[in-house]
Amino acid sequence: MAAVAELKDIASQVRRDIVRMVHAVQSGHPGGSLGCADYFVALYFNTLRHNPEFNMDGKGEDLFFLSNGHISPVWYSVLARSGYFPVPELGTFRHLDSRLQGHPTTKEHLPGVRVASGSLGQGLSVAIGAAEAKKLNGDDKLVYTLHGDGELQEGQIWEAAMYAAHNKIDNLISAVDCNDAQIDGKVENILSLGNLRAKWEAFGWSVLETNGNEIEELLSALNEAKSLTGQGKPIIILMKTTMGKGVDFMEDGHKWHGIAPSDEQLAQALSQLKETLGDY
View: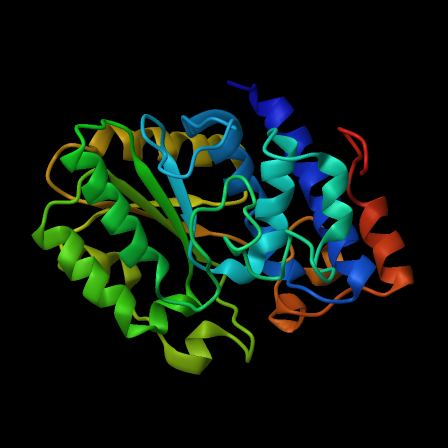
């Protein structure tokens, strides 16, 4: 397990990877990727019991499913930085015939990706199936998912939430990126989600809340979530994050949901992000 200072250094490098990947092809989703960098680093470099020697069935290891697949840049960076594929491959992001497509896909057989995602609302259902399979196989490892708060406007999420509680899927730890931003504006203005804690509790889940941009608080929340597994309820972590975190001109707004920085903006962004592991 990495120390907090090391995790923060990794997160800084991951943010550099994100802005460079999206800039290089002038396409992609930097805002949510930057906002979730701390979560991915805490998960993959501390909490998740996983093996970069990838096998698709995932027996004997924790599984992760990214439901809001448009934030693929942050996932690709963390997968590469944790040994799933060579770091220089990040330079092929969104190229024709690349394994690193704009939304994760299994067609290219990218290590670490077990299901194509990007059609919002589907990841929780997939994760529940994987969690049930682990129970049936006597596998004591856990299943993790990440969702966007705007994604919770999808009805399939709430069908899955009911199913998970009813069937006591208590080896499942989901997280929501609560940045109050989606492509058309603030989530609150597009379609308010109301009191999310009360809503998930009413659906029968154990609910935790944390600051998704503070490594120490994330680690604490993830550890608490693990301690709640096996008690008859699925668990969800509501993470308050800032879209574009780490790059001042990208922070706190929906504008950077899906646009790429210019050459000048890239230089400005990189000046704010420490290079810690070496750029690809």
